[in-house]
Length: 382
Ligand code: AGP
Image (cartoon, rainbow, N blue to C red; front, side, top):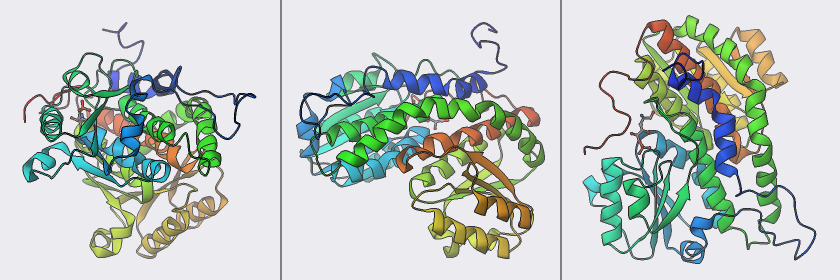
């Protein structure tokens, strides 16, 4: 058991720390870092996804791209949705598999449905896949398990290649799924000259991402253990974010619920004034995601509004952000600093300290980390 855990106490801990390697594996042989000198410099193939070569044009001509998933896999699709919208310029919709089935959601022959599932065996996702297939949609799979039911039943797909994930709480599969969906978006936009600069910037940052993640893992591990000691007896925790980090808030809250067994909610900060603000007082801990991206100014205003109500804040921000450091000093709130990257990839770095926070709270509260009560790794019943 100890050998399997590679010296770590728990699989969840091991899998959090494995993420730089897991995302490297997801990109291996698929992301080309050097721009080649020959050929049309405007149209270089820098992303190679063998599984999508034959269906690429069909996907691009789709009426819409629909992502279907459950739990953490759904959050990964949410984190990368904006990148697909921006790169492919096709309407993107997200569906929780169970809800799609409950509603008998209309699906058409010219839809592309992308089924995201770590195990590839989740019953709701599999039923939704059968439902979409029967309606003639092109079905794409993104799974971490070769030979799984979803990988076999889809027309084409991407294997995550993140390595086995054993802890019930999904961690490395999540960051790897965001990578895979982002690579898919970039591959679909490869012929677009107008998107070239943006595409190249994202690809360059994909190459830098594993090292950026490694660079703060150990420091954050220690810092999150300390923060966990302060927060472990909380009755509730809120996570506020917007833009593609809304997924970060939802995913952090899910981790706190499922392993630390603490009530927790991820809240879209744009909705704050429509209800959640009433919960704010000086006791309830609130984590605000305010890294430097297009949402930064809006998140700063959220921070000001929360501080005006004496909220107990923990701000997740870009390393070295002087404005946020000033808030921390003046208002006695804590900072979680993460390296900056391009906006589509920032959720991949932002989730790491929050996974560590959930992990350490679980240990300190004495709960079962790898087998939380009432849960199974793969939910094979609907
Ligand atoms: C994540 O921590 C959960 N264990 C759960 O939400 C999971 O992501 C969900 O059941 C979907 O699983 P899948 O990715 O294997 O389909």
